[in-house]
Image (cartoon, rainbow, N blue to C red; front, side, top):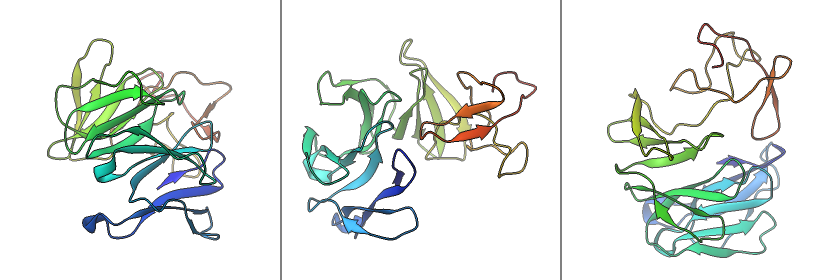
Amino acid sequence: PSWSVDGSRIVFAKGTTKALDSRIWIMNSDGSDERKLTNRVGDNPNWAHYSNKIVYSSWHDGLWVINADGTGETQVCDWTWASSPSWSPDDQKIIFCRGFGPIFIMDSNGDNLHRVSTRSGQHPVMGVDGRIMFSGKNDSIFVLDTTSGIESLVSVGTKSPDWCPGIITLPYPPGTFFSGVGLIPISEIHDGYATTKKGYYLEVENSPFGNK
């Protein structure tokens, strides 16, 4: 599942995934007004950060982008087993993998597709500084510096990572981390608050590690 820009709706896959028969659905955040968004087989939907566009994988039929109202469905990659797509922080790029394989990146319209990782992985997500975090073999997490090409192992025994803007103090207990990776660098804090990619404000506190 993935949240809409304003947090009012959720997009998700529903159906028999093992039989490659799931479809993309959408509903309000309270579970009401559930409706099917696509007739095409789909999985791994991901809502853009600043628009109503949703990218999803369609198993043997590549990657597709569709508007949240069901219009404008467009194929942006025709690769079989292209999966786990996600948006860059500015929504200009789409990051994905091919099955459990290398990580790729392309423009949001499908142009300039190229491989960025040497190792295989799943569930790639890009941080605000352009680094890509992804799940590797044996429940490990790697961070890829797309400038240098260096892939760093940052955690073992965890998977399906996401970037965190800071340490959440409310409504969670002080010092609770948002990610199994632990402390994640954030770009900036203003007056004790950080803004998430979905537009919510989180109260943050300094840590012994500085801007983490």
